[in-house]
Image 1 (cartoon, rainbow, N blue to C red):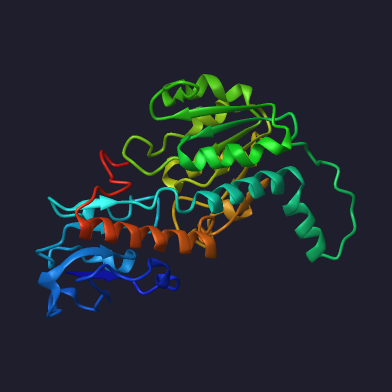
Image 2 (image 1 turned 180 degrees about the vertical axis):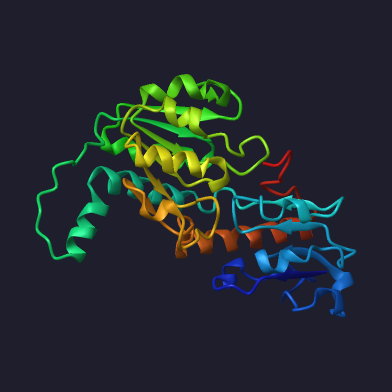
Length: 302
């Protein structure tokens, strides 16, 4: 059996391959690779996935190193199992979300702008995280990690929202009525047909005046035009790691909008997260070779 993997740093964290399994780098032209008929397991990056996997007749498992699978799900052949890296990047994502909330509350953008201008001016709009109400939209494993990191800061309440209601978690159909009661919304939604544009003008209008939107999920879940208008009107504030479109064009109005901080889709890409993702890939390869059940199998787009 052969496994092809993208050759990013951290691959050594997969640990030794199982007996009888050869791990090799993705070739430039998979269709021309002499060993392609023996490839059962792949760990692709977006470039390797771009051409699809039809040239690999023995392929059984596609394992991503990301929790999001919107970039690859439509390229998976029938009969092939897709697994995501759910859990591997939870800590990194949760740390970024906590930073995003604190950066907004403590006027990080204004402070950086003043420093760049060598201007000493009192920051009079600092806010408290203690006593705040935070809504987590898309409350899965990353949401749980976010909630755990909010606890020491004395947050008054965490409102949990997921695709379907369950004990202690509201269904997404309740979102609009929940928004007026919270100070910050942390959006962790994946990109699916159901979530595309979900957070549009209506949801933004339902948010409390001056509330914060943090988006670490997918940019397509938020209507960017509606968000820009809400920012310019002073209705909301935002910290965004993901936007729509990506990359954000140089002339896009979001760059110059007030009350927003933008980072370039990097929240989950830390050394620890990379090691954990590669370690998961190694575990999955060993499970596949041993005929054991795989973790994080994607079903119904999740």
